[in-house]
Each structure stands twice: as structure tokens, then as C-alpha cells.
Picture 1 (cartoon, rainbow, N blue to C red):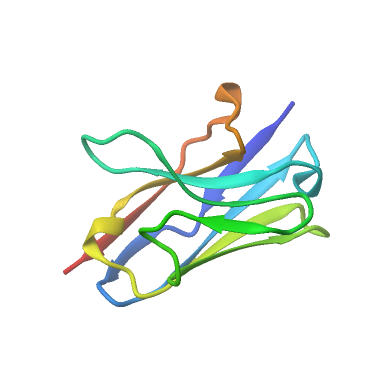
Picture 2: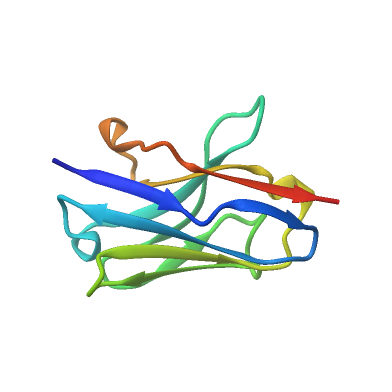
Length: 115
């Protein structure tokens, strides 16, 4: 059974940083394209960043230059380093495959950026 567990969220001031983690079990994270997604209140869930099995990364324009997605194959864990956070980054952040597989959505981790 596949489990994706997000952690690392919290409350941070604008301009601050957070690193989110996604612990993957039941599948090989490095064999699948994986992504970070977020859903802000009243908005649809959107793709923030993704990483291919080969390690290529792609970012939404809104986070390009501020967020860095990475993967630790030994730990089967994916990360996103978020710097220069803005109030508009406030959302629940989720990890999933790319494209996302509905049954794999977890609880997410809340990121709140205060201005």
C-alpha cells in the first residue's frame, strides 16, 4: 500500500524559509515522477514543482527561483526547500506522483506565511 506523508509546514514570516518533506512508502520515489502541489483557501490545487526519475526539475512560474525540489533516494523521501516566502505561498502542501494519482493524496502540511 502506498503512503505519502508530508511534514515540515508551519508559520513563518514573509521572507523566511521552510523545508517540507514527503516520506514515500510502497513505491520507489526515484522510479516515479513526483511533484509538490498546494491548495490555498478557495482555490484549486496546483502543481508547484516536479522532479523526473532522471532528476530533472520543473517549477511553476510563481515559485521559480525561490523553491527547490529534491529527492533522497536512500531515504525514499522528497523535499522542497522554500525560500523568500510570500503571503501568497500560504496553502496546504501535498506531495504525489506526477501526474497525481487520486488515491495517493495525503493529509498535506499547512504552510502559513505572515506578512
